Image (cartoon, rainbow, N blue to C red):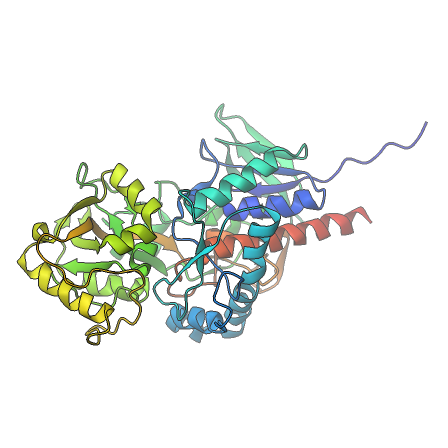
Length: 468
């Protein structure tokens, strides 16, 4: 009888957002079987909601004359004071992120057939480098859906939803698999190297968020309420970093139909990037293209208009030019009842003066008093009370957790003694150290693709080395 073939090692991925799907795509390309476990009923995680785009520089969609070498420095600047600790480690993570951004966009466009031909500038960026498609589909959905559809065609890819990982298995300091339970509650084990891509803890209001940022108690969030998974990883020796660094996004929609809901829908940063402005008490108050952290600080320095949840009343205002540039987004928000087409007269008497000042700066008639230098697609030059605008009410919301388990540039999860934990990798929002004190818009999808692909490649190498 011929010798029996040893069973193929299965790679385990926890989380079906873009980080997990990017890792799975690489593993399947290397012919490594994948078991993907997702605790929600539907795959996609928060990645599927992302609507501003994915950063990349330099790419063929940026002007040929633009030498965008500032992505690294913009990211370091955005990270802020966090760069003063673990500096060398952070620099390596950021360098890997930004230097791999061009390849990440090209992989999605050329290998996966995703349209990312439209480029916008977002807050904190020196140049336009956030890519999205020209059609009606938001970039997060387009990317996640394309990768998932492709993976489902593979016989070595197996997705299980409504399955929660309850323990990371370890033997002699090496991760060997996970324990999990699905809807029937029965605990099972699956063995193999593990990639954790289970997302952040922004929805863990009573758990990790309350522990590390009690000052954010009462804030609404863009995240579904669910526990953070970092404790599963610290139980096997993972080191945490930046857990107190939580991004409060300045613009989550206040739904007029349910203003007190603690769960908010994000007003994509691309709306401000394409020329939208913000009004507080009828007046502009800051450069809308500053970092999320700084815009939020100015808003939250004023008294909230509601305490349950804790929220402010800020108006996001767009003109017809911005509407045309971000039509797919705005039409969706109008459909959801989060924005409306109206006139300046409905914004109050002070709003007209602020909008006129903004229009003059956009037309080059005067400098913007808040230092804004890019007005993108704003076209309204002579606003009147009857001028058409598109308006939504927004408030700061808990959006993204920069902290998590520490990884290195190979996506290996790092132990307390600074060595890698064998058999365990991490990618996406479950990890920390990449963004520091503030994440640039467009870098969450990028982080997922870059470190998800790295994790997939590393696990493929790990599996191959153990065959030998």
